[in-house]
Structures are given as C-alpha cells and as structure tokens.
Image (cartoon, rainbow, N blue to C red; front, top):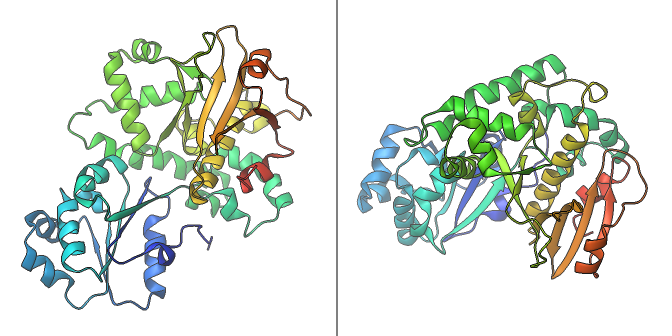
Length: 378
C-alpha cells in the first residue's frame, strides 16, 4: 500500500471539522477507512448516500443530532456532498459537542463547498487529496527507478488504481471507465448542466491545447456555446478536480499577454483517455505538452502538501517571448522553461530580463525534473 502524504490523525482537531476534498477514485475512502482501522477513538462511519442520514442533517434537529453522536468520539461521513445544506448540521455538532472530532469527505468541491461554506467559517480545515504524487512514490522507489517510469506516468497518469495495476491494457480500461462513468458524474448532476456531449467536446479541445494559451471566445465558437456558458463550464470543471487554470503574469508591461489562460489536467492519464491516445512517447507529437502538464501538476501537489504559499503563472508577450511556468513566493519571481529535450540552458527572453531583472530562469527537463518536484524549496 502506498503511504499517502495526507495523514488524517495529524489533521484532526477538536472544534475543527476536517474536510477532505478530491476527485473520485483518488483514494479518499481508502485513506479514511485505513485511518479508522488504526484509530483508538470510538467512531461512527456513515455515507452521504444514506437517506436517513440525509434527512437527519437536513432537519437540523438539535436533539436528533445529539442522539446520533451520543457515545462517540469521532464522526466520519464519506461522500458528504450528497447531503443538502450539510454545513448547518455540522455547525450544530461542532458547537454543541466541542470535544467531538469530525471528518467529512467529498468528491466534488463545488457541491460540498456550497453546502458547507458560510456556516462553518472558522470551524473547518480543508485539505485536497490529489492522485498519487511522485513524492509519495519516492518512499517506494529511488530516483533512478522513478526516472525509468516516466513514460508510464506520462501515458497513464497517477490515479491510485493505475499505479498499482501492471497491465497496460488494464490501465487503459480503468482510465476509460473513469472518464465514461465518474469524471463528469458530479458535474452533470447539477441542474444547470445539461449537455454532456458539449462538456466532453470542451474537454477534448482543452486536451489538444495543454501547454498553450486558450481563448474563451475561440472555445465558445468551436463548441457552439456562448462565452459566458463556456466560462461557467470551465469554472465547474476546475472545481470538480478535472482541470487547473493557470493565468498570465503581468506587471503592467504593455507587451504582456493577460487575457488568455492555460488549462492543465489534474492527471495526464485522464487527459489521454479523453482523446483515446495512449501511444508510446516515440509515436506521438504531444510529448512536450504532456511533460509540461505533468510537471506543473506534480509541482502543484508538492506545494499543496508542503503548505507552501505560491502562485503559478505563465508569461508571454505579444511578440512571442515566453516563459512556460512562473512561480511567485516570498516576494520573489522564478521562471521555469519545461522541455522534454535535454538542452542544458534556457534562452532568457530579452523582455523577461528587462521587466523582471531579479527573477531567475531555470530549465526543467527529464534529467533534472525529480529534484524540482520532490523539493519545492527551489
């Protein structure tokens, strides 16, 4: 079993509800049940799919909720996004039973955050669980072994089930099932989202453009939707842990592009499944884009798990000068050129030097990407 970086026992505190978010099938239920199997606390585990539990929390009945938790030190609710307005019920529990520890998991951040939001202000701690990270795999493999698996990572991604499955044919089947049955389940359950085909068309367009700037108006034209609707769909896809939006860095230089964004997939295996493209790296023309997506998201995982406050951007000018990835932390800007090729030194754009004279520019390639991912301090 892969040891996850998120350790529930370290995060659980009285008077603070622990909320664990993540995409479906990233291992939240496994993580929760593993924690409970070793816990010395007297606990009660329930699922948000339980209709009686839904009615109980929706009722906001003080005495009924008190009866529900009586005799327990820990309450755990899996798939909590299924319970409408769960936030008010949880607020009652944490206020009336301050010594009680509570953990809820949710596969959809927009559903669960809307339900929890304001009622739990100051009463919650939120943690996102991503697909397996290379930092987590580094406890099982050394750096050479991880480097040898880079092609598998870029083709099939790092969902837990994918990592533990040996057969490439089976990996492809699992990813297709994830896309067909789970990826859009929460999103399509929203009343205002009616067109699954349009959502998939939108995702396919993004899949072919990873690493490139995206214009909402161009996307809208291609999927035959208005710009406002496309923007709403993209926002929901991001909140549903499918994609990640990266905006442009600008310090008011007139030449800098600011109106577009880049969209990366939280998992490159999901991206490949959306376009049914699992070819070996030597037989495809998108390896560089895949590598950039992979690096950006692995860095995102590392920053999140290290609780490192950092903003991620890209940078480009209208005359074509660009830096693939830019991070801003501790008041400093650091640029990264992400290249699958093994070039030794990045070319520093002239406008980058003049606009950000104190900023560094580092090349990240397949020879040095592991230190960059495993140690976010650089």
